[in-house]
Image 1: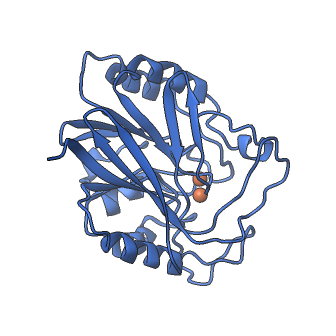
Image 2: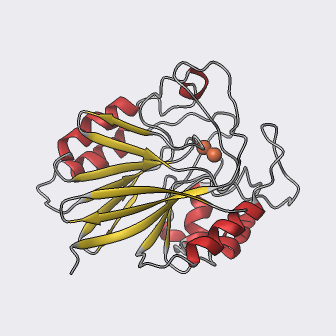
Length: 266
Ligand SMILES: [Fe+2]
Ligand SMILES: [Fe+2]
């Protein structure tokens, strides 16, 4: 007998690139082999999974929406439905068009949506800014109002929230330059739902960190590409020597939330 409500896999920052040799300026790692290994190992997990939550940076700075065909082909190999968020390196409208098959009339500038699986409410918020030269996040007043309506509602479903950027500073100065600049506004409305909020799941930082504030739990996932290693008050970015991707396995039961941190073998 089990009181399991659902299990989802949290992946993030796959940073696929149409140039298979692309490494960017911060690493010498290319993303595709790690992403392929991660997909194979997720597909081989010996337990039930309900869906995958991808918290953004699906690709790295694609020049056209058509480039998302690569993400569709690669991530489409996952055996479960994938729900996407838009990261600072993404194109929110291309995600809707190519990865979510939304008809043109339903495509919105920002990717905010909710869905329900097994009686669990999942709210996805778009913290990306349509400016490729900046990497911090922001949630507009309209988005906050939309989220607040849901968080303050008289609703007893367990709640999961997904977003790309870290809403709260992590006390890592270089990383906090690319934080969600008004994340404390988001936190303030999340607190209204904390009796049913099981966690806020985010990406962007390429590292596993858990923050607890006012009873709200924030969990990040590793990247599908390369990882960072940070510490309190760290001034300069540093990569983790072992760049293997990772993912989180999140299981909700009626009373508990389990977040397990898995590493991918390369
Ligand atoms: Fe990223
Ligand atoms: Fe990011």
